[in-house]
Length: 226
Length: 229
Length: 55
Image 1: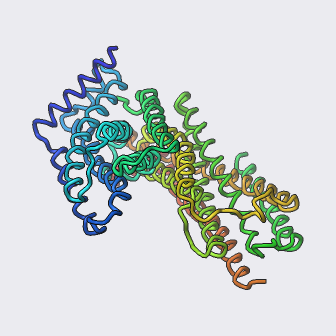
Image 2: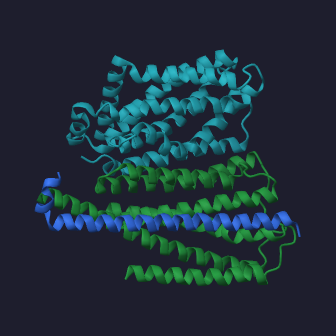
Image 3: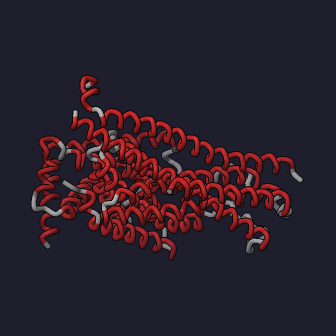
């Protein structure tokens, strides 16, 4: 219970900091819009093909823009030895990691909401008819990205070339989650009825989130050492 | 002692390989549908298997490092990942060359190829990360964590890409004559070659582990010299 | 027998051996470099006062 309370505290701190400066949100949001714009040149925005590739497009945008968010997540603690202070505090490493993941999650969700609105406008896609299920898919997929982002943000915080290494390490690990999220998003954007194999993707999302959250909490002491 | 073991293993691997090559080219007949090129299988598949086994053995050593903090386990894990990467690369390249003849294309997004590529990328990231960390304890700790995450992910990657590709079927990867089991004559040489590649892998791992230990010795001597001066 | 089959079989074997040989060469060179470095550092560590002015 204390871990949850502490995690919420860390998340609140990070969100408060972010809302004051909005640096990650602005950067991620702008980056998402630029990528969507570039995609409009890569594919014909008016064709029916957009419904087929829309899922993939969106999740690529989320993954790339997300890297900006979780790069900052632990890096913002480096000046003035804030990270060392946090690690020396009574907060457990698991609560620090989960709190950071939660803050990343909420920031990414905000960016995703903006992105899907812009995507709907740019590519003339109606995303509202199954918004409930779509938001569930977004939430599950984003949690996985945020958790892994927090873990590897912590792992790479003190390394040279951190901004380059974080994407190299994290994107291959995210592939199963991205595949599942892309398939489900594609299904929901084209408003098709789900087949039994689509429930498999939902299961993969849930299993991925559960397994990596558990692993992260178990290894939090190893990842975050004073 | 370890050097002698490595040399012994390398010699045994060489002898086995020589025998297997003789069997492959002089004894076994050409395969009915593919002709001569099926012989690539004897390196392609064992290399993949040794690579995969290697990643999970590295996982074991990573966990052992985290529980015991003995650097030998970290050296072993890193060496095994490196050697497994080499064999995974052999797997992908030989597979690609074979595919060029059998399917007419260098690459396809078949689930096995895609998963193999993802595994290579995951563990390439592991090696990249190791090179970026100078401090040995931090390097060992972070590498172990990444190896654990990587290996757990490998399992999820294989299953999910398999399901994904079953929804979007590509060319069928079926090197066997009719999708049935391998001819007993072939499977004998196959498993012997698997053993040869495994022995070669173990020899390379032993040499690499020795080098990791030397690097650590250099590091500690440097610190000693620095503090003494 | 299709001649291209033989050529590509040869390429396949060549690729497998080349990759492994390249790795063995990399290992050998790394080993030699480490040995040289170890000898140098051992010399410095055993006579720190002689090398102090190098800094």
